[in-house]
Image (cartoon, rainbow, N blue to C red):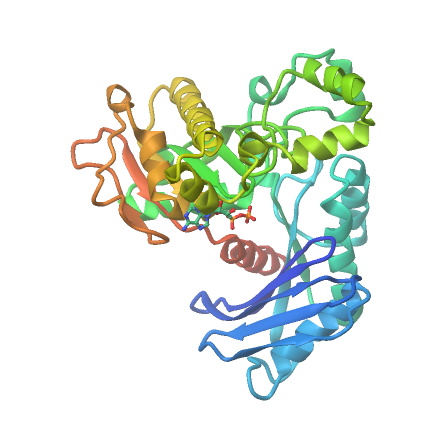
Length: 400
Ligand code: ADP
């Protein structure tokens, strides 16, 4: 079966087509500036053939029409007809508590996703727009929603309940949900495969370190805790997000600076994190250059980031009663050699010992721990699209 994977943001849309007979990527692309001047589609086939086209795209439907044209394009397309697509897999960020696994999209499912607009205002509305646009253009093709929150739905209440009056959980669903679930699931399954050990026999700590970052504790293939919470703002320090702070700071700064709550939340989401600490950049490549040139705040940002990740690893080692595997993934986890070394430094007493030579690698699936490290440390490039396509096939096959 050929599967189209759609990851729809408010003004951007990423897509991939995979042939799931052999899990082969056929083509991928990105539409940017949907609804903004200068809309552009970048399309690339597996053999490298592709194009970049600037053309007005006022709506997500127009963006998807352009994706279809790219996929059917004579020179760099991969399909003769859109009927070759057996199913579409949509990345959806938030499913609340009602949907805990990937699911066939029906009108009822869309209603549930719309109910989540309240708790995921910047993510779920564009996700649903993408689904509706696809449905309008491919009314007979099954569509599956794969949720960022689903993998974390196995967390026990002791991990997801906040210590605020319980009624807010009951009334409004205020609890920790966790995000990046598709990635945590993918890399934990890959880790078990790489080590040739049944995932049921493994305790794994996965570190998804990208612009957004989260750490998860996984026992027997099930998530038991994760660092992000009610929204992706909680947890470790990130590119531009603060991660966990004392909530009393919010009112204090709002009052001193005369900020509205919207401005305050924007500051915590977009102007904080390593960007806010350093004043240099949210990109770890820029931070490393600046730190090497003697910029103390860039160095401080890197130090704080590493310390927060260490803190979660330590906490999850305690929760899991030790671990067998630590996995690094996503932009920083896959590429930032120095940051991986920094996070793993001084943890030999906990059974964590990196091999500096093995660690000198980027974007490859490999073991980077020393031979005598009690805990295996793995580098695994994430592949959320493949995971979405796998779930899509299994949901569609289960209906058949
Ligand atoms: P997201 O999907 O959350 O936008 P990614 O997983 O693509 O983010 O990660 C992007 C981040 O990865 C960049 O902002 C940068 O900090 C980091 N990164 C990418 N390449 C490198 C590199 N070679 N060295 C250090 N950091 C890198």
